[in-house]
Every structure is written in structure tokens, then in C-alpha cells.
Length: 247
Image 1: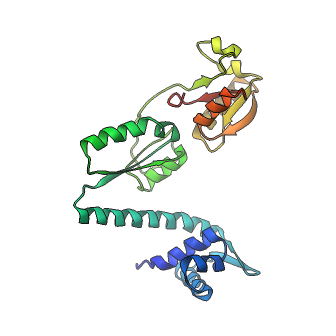
Image 2: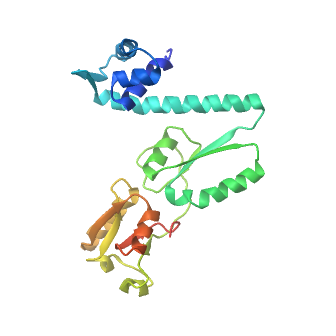
């Protein structure tokens, strides 16, 4: 099957711009030309990608599904172009990695530094993403390996335990719980809690523990990363359970 990348690029730009006219300006094409490209794409795929409403285009569910695949296509094409240039320059191949934010601050930079000393001509691309995105990138082979938090929901890749660590409590220095060596679920009852958002895999584990203990902390703030959660604790906004790498 021939892949007309120009048509898929037009689709991608429309999804980003929100209008055919906006996409036409970005692409440097006429609006009718862009419309014809989308008509051709819909014809080739046999599905409707946009609803036309008073001069606007509203993406269908199929369009959102297609966008995920198109994004992968252009990531792969970009990687292929980069690889071709490196072959032309006589340089080594590279490695692509993805990791959760907690490991992207200090751990992975140190790993990359050691790797670069051994392979100075090798190219390294590091993507710092939430664990659910790291899992998706590995499953779709957009990176060579990833470091993420379990449990995993997808399949099609090999998994190995990298580290098995306990979460830690981030507390103001003068907080009553700061004197405890171990913080248990019951200790958080009624506390102002800075919690992970529902998009973070650890949130599911935390909710299970809280519900199992039958307690009700006051979840006043939600956040996606441990680092800003710790900063909020320092400012007296509450307590937090965070990953040990950030703490």
C-alpha cells in the first residue's frame, strides 16, 4: 500500500489547527486543495473523519483514533531521516529511551553520561513522560526501552523489575507525623493531602490503600509529579506520598 504522507500531514495539521483555512495557511496550500486531500483520505479509508458544520470541521471518533497512528508515522519518519543522516556522516546508531519524571531528573542523566563516555559517537534520545505514556511508547516500538511504574495495561513487550522501592511521605519539618519512622494509612486520616491525579498509575494503588483502611484524608490538591508536590509541602499546603527517587 502506498502511503501519501502529504495527505496525512494535511490531516494532522487540520487536527491541530481546528480549521481547514488555518491548516491551509500552515501548509502553504489553498483551502480547496486541503479539502480535496481530506476528501481523498476519507475515500481511501472508507470512513468519515470530519463533520462539516457551518464552515467548521468537527473531528469524528475515527479521526481521533487515526491521529494517534499518524503521530506514530511521523515520529518513525523523523527517526528514519535522522538515522539516514547519521549513516551518511559515518556516525553510530543511537538508542531511544523513555522514563517517568522521577527518573528523568538525576538518574537517567547520569546513565546517559556514563553511556556517552563509552560510546561518544552514539546518539541518545530521552523522552520524559508519565508512566502510561512510557508504556505506550514501548508497546508501539517508538523507543528501545522504557522505565515506568507498574502495573502495565498493555502487552507486546518484555518487562523486567528495575527497582522495588517503597513510597515515602513528604512532610513539613514541624509536622507531628515527622517524628514517625513509618507512616501508615491510618496516620493520614483527616490530613490535608496533596495527591496524584487519576492519570498517574500510583494513584490507583494509593486509592486502594486508603479505601482498604477506611480513612478519609482531605485531598485538597492533585498533581502529576512528585517534585512539585514536594515543593507544595515545603510551602505548608499539606502532606504528600511521593516516589523515593524525587524525595
